[in-house]
Length: 461
Image (cartoon, rainbow, N blue to C red):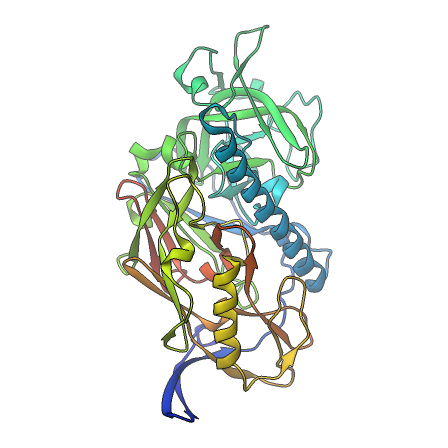
């Protein structure tokens, strides 16, 4: 993509009202259609042992696994996955709160519940066998399908066979790593720790909990605790497994914290405007010098998700009326709050906050021709025949970090006929979720040691 197609010029539009003149800050939105699916093409180098303290990987969107579908079909599938994802996140939080400390949690998988928006190529074992793995900030446990498969879903690559790896090792039942599982089991046959991850739709993965070497391009990471699934049933498809990037003690960033200094980041490109790949980085170089940081908040009832403190939102340069920090507060019982999530596409705001934001945007965009509602979007516009339009700016005000969104991050095409919709939605839940459409183009840095998340604009360059 040419850089000029990405640059969004900030302009000022002067409007008049009865009481006098006031300024509305606007962004220029370059108009484009839904993206065509692209075919995966990645040349992988032979793995070599290295002492590098950073990992740089390309990310691919799940649409790349569905090149036989039209852009409209892919968009509808994305919204369907998104609805399942949000429902599953809410169910997990509700279940954990209701059951208290005795609850054996069900972990949310990108493969089953729609969080599998982005995946990368990872080598498993020695010698490394490369497979596609979903990356998900809303999950902790790392797992993949393993032979022999009693029941396995169809995946793009050959199923990993642990007997052909020199570095595979089962974890004993009484080992500390086994006790980190929410509901560990033990094999009567060989006394190896067993894991099971279940999902709200009935999908599950079950198998041996083990340690194995993972290879990221030329970097080997040894003794990563992962589930070797021999029985994987349900709605899984495509990828071989999942690399959990959550805050829990079995997630990949926490397990490898010493090597990569508890830091990682990703940058997700707008697939409708660029062929440049998204990327993920582990290590000190993951943190951009231009990032603006906001503190992470801890939920005492759930350690997986990344909670942020959202203080307010501005539209057109003015704070949205009726939208206060109290609408986004995480209370002592684990209710409410705001999480940032790589697997949710559309940002969900608790209903009162969404209505206030939507109404403010409608007023600022009153010069645009309205279009019918589309799926979960209730604020849409007919921009057919235009090449660009002026739209009100939208700024998310986190504690310590103001994140000014490019127009392409909140007014998106929903068909190839010129219909664009405001890419936020309301939820009856108290939980708000910052989705990956709003994260596009920023390098999102997760500094677990510093307990903070950073936003660096133009971070995919």
